[in-house]
Image (tube, rainbow, N blue to C red; front, side):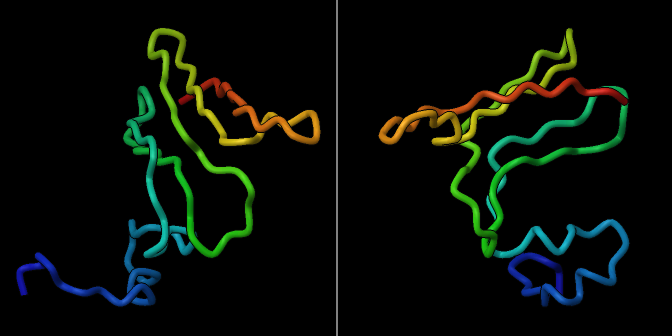
Length: 95
């Protein structure tokens, strides 16, 4: 087969070097991805099915000059009974 439209058993991926981790499955959804500066690593942030969590990533951006990644988590900034604001996280990227 040429690989286009070919089904790959998820269990088979566990034995392949460089394959996605077990947390990345058919229910996973990448929201924001980028190459980490000065590395050969491609980072992907999003959600994974089968994980019990009340928050999901709803957006992201980065500042390459300062090497800072910003992610917005849905409903994670709740401080009262009825508010549901997003929470903005900032991560300093270091090679």
